[in-house]
Image (cartoon, rainbow, N blue to C red):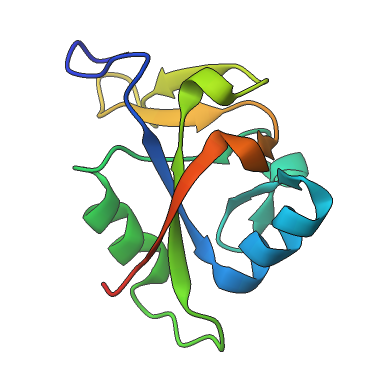
Length: 115
């Protein structure tokens, strides 16, 4: 984990409103990234506040879906699964990855993403 991050800092995950609404009914959120589930990817992709604009542009820059996009604000202290900061390539920027589902009570805020 980067020195600038702390175990109490919230992390973020951008998703479609309908996926979050469905997760609230089930009690857990299990989407890794746009179009891929936790089961397919092995972890849930997240970001820090500073990383979010770049991640959103990369994943949803061409998004024209029917649902609005929302940002889940996750409290790592409320997770049941391991949280690891990992780089996609050696020496690259590290991103937070959650190795299991996100309990809905770990989501301490939901923000509309305007892009």
